[in-house]
Image (cartoon, rainbow over all chains, first blue to last red; front, side, top):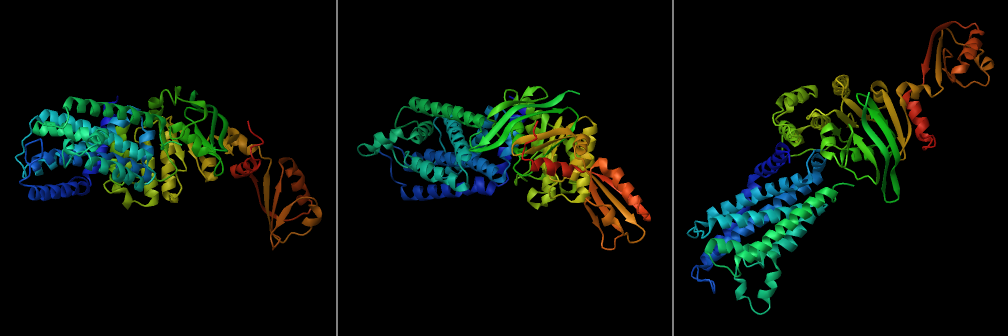
Length: 253
Length: 307
């Protein structure tokens, strides 16, 4: 791996979203801030069954995950579809990037944005709850893993998409439903009948649950199993995306 | 002189369309090489394969001895390709774009080269503005700067002067000629045949996905047996129709200028016939064929005369 080549791509990806920070960093905070205001006010006296903690403490890790997921995905998917739209995708093809450098370069750009928005969401959330994190290093570890997964997923979407509309198919029909049904706002254990088992097929559930464990020390399932699922998914996507760059999926004719 | 680019048996099709049909070509180091052909001839597809933008169906290309597939990182560093389509990254200024591209090619601090390119391409005063504020010609010059920022050994210019005004076109060519003199290999595709004729040492003419002719510029032009004799007379010339029977010619309305297109072997015969009329001649000019004549002839053949 050529360090200068690789870090130039990372730098480009970070600089790209930093130049439009109002749209990429601050706008997502508004929606998360509204969730925090509404839920902290509406359910201030409510506790989550089986957890014995205030509702706001329960949803903060999920909301942070939601910001992280949406922004990691948005960064890589919009960067690639934008590059295809502007024609500058050829800059990445003509330059001597290895396929893994392209994968990691775009991925880290998405991770940085996800982590920045996630961190600022956490800072805002501290105004609504104490700000305690039971296992801070574990929280960071899971946040890195989750942001890498959705950055990689965003690369797949950006490569596949032929227009901006196509990217919204991914976010509206996959990411948003999977995130909202992952237990951000409720405990999956408390779901009636088969629905708690169905939730186990939702990969985002493991991400939210693992991060919740890192924050409050409790989770619906064991965090080791969640880590295995998340780690495997990250590895699989890393291989898939590197392969897509190798074959020039939808970018080479 | 050793080989800069070796192209062997390259084929590429898009569905039923054979975009490239068994292309074989050697381009020597230090050459100023022209790749000419009508739209759809396959020039950009060939350049796309060279740069890794297009998959080939079969065949092999080496750049400075390195295979474009197995040694693609080396070959990409050796190539500077100016694409035909104008593209730009709207997030970054001209200078930022060039700094970023230097980084892509593994160069950390490249400000000296960037300043040189900005000056050579008359973009110095635009260095700190975004590409949306550049005119079409300026955007094209930025593309050229991007391709040259890593000081490549081989420079491929795919229609580089489309939309660039004459003055800047000349300064661009001066810069490229200078690069060629420094030993850089230049490959040019252009619709301006006069440019190719003025600049290129050797030329390949493509048509319908095939290379129909590769030769030195002089040999190509000499391959067309065509001379145009232009004669100006002091007074209105009479008797030409009778004397030049079976010879095609154009006579001006005032009968003071004649233009005759002929083969080389007939020049002497024609001049003697005109001389026999005892006309008062004030000027004679004999023009040779141009690259354009070769181009028209070969591309009209539809690839029948390929090698």
